[in-house]
Length: 326
Image 1 (cartoon, rainbow, N blue to C red):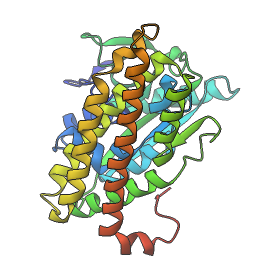
Image 2 (spheres, one colour):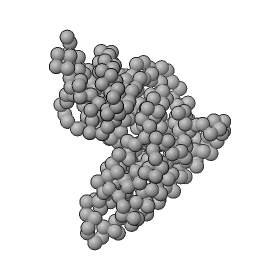
Image 3 (tube, one colour):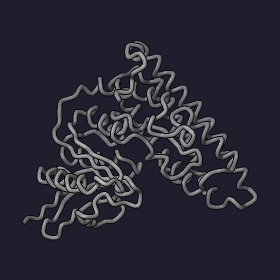
């Protein structure tokens, strides 16, 4: 029996997303050498925008993981395998045993795995003698242990993992152009995995946020988490577009709009304490200001998408109604 630990695999939580975990693995492996915001952009992750209509904290992780994450790996030239399901399904023990073998095999190749453990974490090692995995969640300094038999048994009913197999050469400029086509897709299209009565995506997410804030019908803690995460994501979009224009100068005007969008979300961040003091007299004034800022953000992002549509009008049209690579 053997013990294997992958070094040095660390999870730096910035946008509290799948991208954080994916980047931790690919950068250590030497398969992605650009900054993390470039991975967020090239995989189109920073253009995803979906919210629960009551602003629950699952807003930022409510999307089709299987489709989005496989496309993400494909866009940056990484071959990947993944599996997911519900831990209450009668077949779960079979999938769990397969997942243990699959993740161990990846670690034997000196490659970590992304795992859902009520957030996306990196599995970076295992100990056969003790039958445990080692993982990092970006919070604890030390690696944590997860018994093989507990893999997939989360507080949430979902289990998911992704492992990486090989790297293919990519044309960065073509990937950048494709990522902006995906930005349009995400802006215009509702995720089919999400019931529209409970979630809103893309452009409609802004309307859902404003409606929830106006009605006062929202989860305050969830709103705080959701807006924090999306502020980081919008900053990624701005930084990505700014650097992407060094490959494709025509993105200048798009970069201006995303920079403005990130600035607006910075202002939103400054007012999130309102969700901790909702009983104070001036709380409604703060909520009204948040509503105004989200309306401004909607205008800024709409302008960004319209600029992208102008730049990529022909390739988008050539896809007809199927631009999502799903």
